[in-house]
Length: 469
Image (cartoon, rainbow, N blue to C red; front, side, top):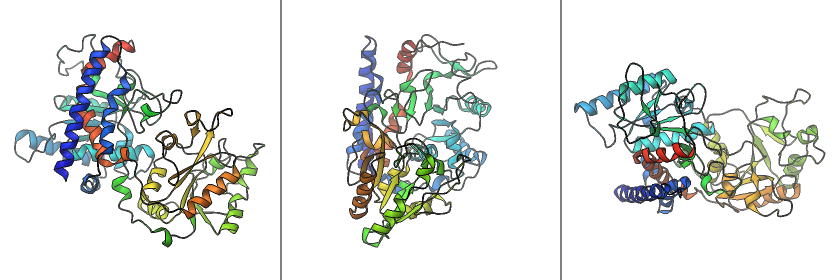
């Protein structure tokens, strides 16, 4: 099965690379459309599922607590591979420098959305055999680059003042001549000579990052499939992520064995009083939203236990921090315990924030439907989804609907109640969107890592009027 899956991935990569070549030829005559570069890897999403997620249990990185410990082990394996003194896996002689803080945070168990994304990408790259090295800061990146420059396949960085920004327009840092076909000189005492086409910026949100924009920005969501006017990241390279490995570790609870429990999804109490709240007060009075009896009433009439965990950070001083009546606050917990709690629930209720979180995907994988608040729409054409703005736009624009996701407009109290009741009584099995299978993620990461991005960079330098300071 794994050999068959490998063959399928190689076929996808060949098709993808041929497609990139065709697009680059078109670019010479001004017909280049960057977002098509990453459209072909999505094809792999629709193959039958394979055993990749079973093979990737994530344990390879669990024993590391520090960046130094992590790098020491994998640099030694790289050295053994190159010297011939140790076993050398496919791609092990190729290095990927992970220069985003969220990659480092994977070692410490952070569960923020960006960390979940990085965790999945690390698993995918490790399964392909690449040597991954974590980066502490910019000087550390420069040190690793000087040491391993001949082996570096890619750098994944962040667009900040303390990371990529001071480098990517600096001629002593980045190698970006007008003609990228020139040979790349090695680093020397004054110049690092990092090829600009080897640097990709990770951006969680729907937008591209400078200086080369879309094709050199990687994204967790397929923004190129989102409608016009809501697709600032349409040209980005979609890597995506997968929760398959982690969620499948949590046992599926049959619907009949679940208590009549609903989980209210919000990180902070302030989300109950901010604009865009699913049960917003018509007069916009925050205190009314915090003291709303909606949950308490539904608990009585429908025998529902509402649970949630909320931090009080950022709560307006004039308001006493507490969840609305009827919601029981549970303690903070590690990710496995949180997944077990969600798996025992019958519905996950979004209240408007946080946006684009992995948690709704996690719930679906555990067999728990999600209620997705629609925060903006066209009053003249309210059912036109291209003009919707939701808590989780990814579930709107990839077409996930009932019984998995219930899209409800904010302020529609009766609609929210109906959705809750219907979701509570309509069982679903585990649901993983095809493009979020681990096999699909591995396919896309292989295309990212094995493509020669130099011609694409040449096009983007011209299109963005790139310059060095």
